[in-house]
Image (spheres, rainbow, N blue to C red):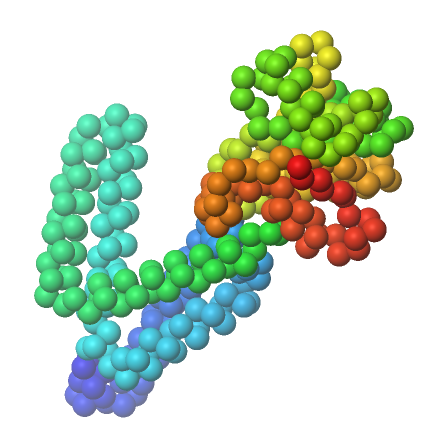
Length: 329
């Protein structure tokens, strides 16, 4: 409307300058929004395994966001009035969340005056947001569709990458390296153990069970491997291995990771590469429904450990003759 008035009453020269300045302002606004998206995406979705690796690259993400912009423009038939409700809702939600974040920060800093002031501003923004959503619900509907789409695509992405080798590096302490160096002179056998009481009976019974189920000779040396699950939402992380001797006779390697199976697979491959031997690892079957166990692995990093460990190893090492051996009894 202002551009029309500029051309109509102030001449085409001024109107053209106004058009150019308007386009430049909108271009800078779009560029700033694009820069914000490019900074936010690699920090969250790829970190949680909910986006492919190319989501960290700038150029592919620019193309994706540009295509989304074209799609939205096509859906709304390039009608500015039709997009107004969605735009207003998005801006108001952004400003409301920012005001709430500043309020929380001021409260943590024990700044009572600023906390009260920002809280009032947050309430005002929330009221305007709700009123706008009631008057023009298109923005909420469109936002809900985008959120649902992001969640669906993210879920499928993480599901497709569930059996990737998620460990970025393996770091052993001095005791763990000593254990590996000592057992490398013989056949390398590990026993996967879920730590419970960690008393003498637990390790004694576990060794006896594994030897009976898998017909392992009593003279063969074994080392226990235990994994503690940290934050299961973390997709990739460094694997730290700590060695310790319990009850004066049982050697235990303690691993900490976001998933048990991926940590064990990465550890076995690391042992193979450092010693030149194919290690063996022994499991016992997990009781329960296999599908429920897979959901436990997908959501919480636990579940049916043995077959998942073997599948991670199969994807990471396509050559069966070099793949660490997995035994289940």
